[in-house]
Image (tube, rainbow, N blue to C red; front, side, top):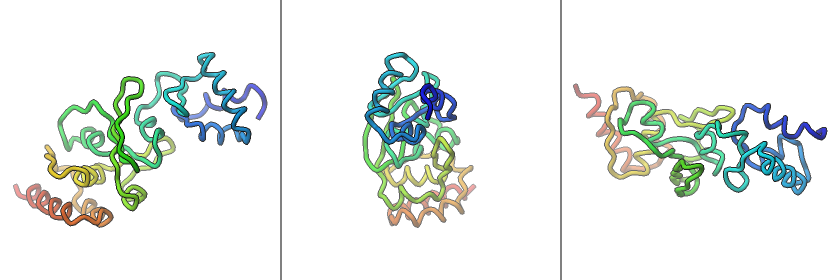
Length: 193
């Protein structure tokens, strides 16, 4: 890559959040030390912002959901974040909830990110997950099941918009009898006028 094109390559990208690995691939850089020096220079000059070690953004207008899925990978947006957006729960959500391979609560740029551990067979199964070029997010049915998986007792405000056919097709991946029992109870309750 020609000198001077490094920063432009990042700025022209549709992504708003970049990990160090993303940048190396974007630059087609094999020398990681040179890439680190270049990135430090861009951060000191104010051309890029470093949100945490190895995570960079173009400016303060970055997509917080995109950031959530870039901090720990593999991961996807789920749980209350999706359920609130879809009207399944009515409580206002101040945290961004993410399904991941570990459990963590971190704060970045005054935003709380809550990572909840899912077993690998469920986390890596892409059924019910919308994968875009910048963001990976669960459907409301997958978020519903993820929430039941991680919570023993949870109240849902509005189950009318849930596609129960999709719920039952996704349920097998969790291999959880407790969940299956609760899903059947909630289905009967939602189906009764």
